[in-house]
Length: 229
Image 1 (tube, rainbow, N blue to C red):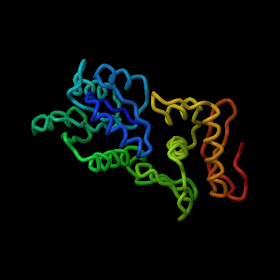
Image 2: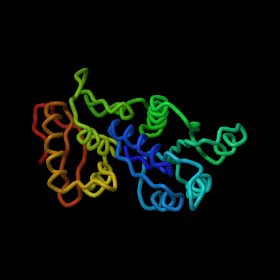
Image 3: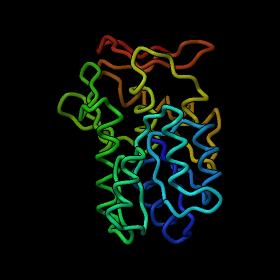
Image 4: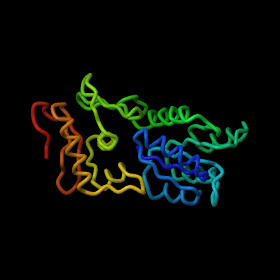
């Protein structure tokens, strides 16, 4: 999953980014409201983690603009503002959850998992394609009852494809889904990740098909046959 963190406290931002990346997510971080608003207009995210006390544009205004654009992306507000009227106001603006600083990272991670679980698979706890089963928030995958041993990048690639069933995903979309702003994934790096994922899916009844000139498609295949190149 790709997550935007809007937080102006460097120490808090560092801890949240480390926690999310350890969980296998790609994370972009901004420290001002105008930058958050611009990022949300220019990129697709699976979750916004939003501080209210941002410079330039307050977090509440970032949230209001997001919802006025009709975007249903889940928003987790993390803030030191703990008054009941403020919590009600922000939830009514369109926040999905509200966490008061200081907070335990374990609780933060649980709330992130809950929001992603509700949004990423249309409320279903898992996605399934043939024998392949994915727990997206938990970053786990199985073929039947056998767990797949996937790296964070391999799971991110599988996730990006699984969230677009029966639709082609371009190389640019895959690279954007897998990388933070400050990371770089070369075409060769993407090819290696796809090759390794195909090997691990071999015999599962699910394969990654190349659509020449367009991108890739996750689809059911004959479990006794090789994957499409």
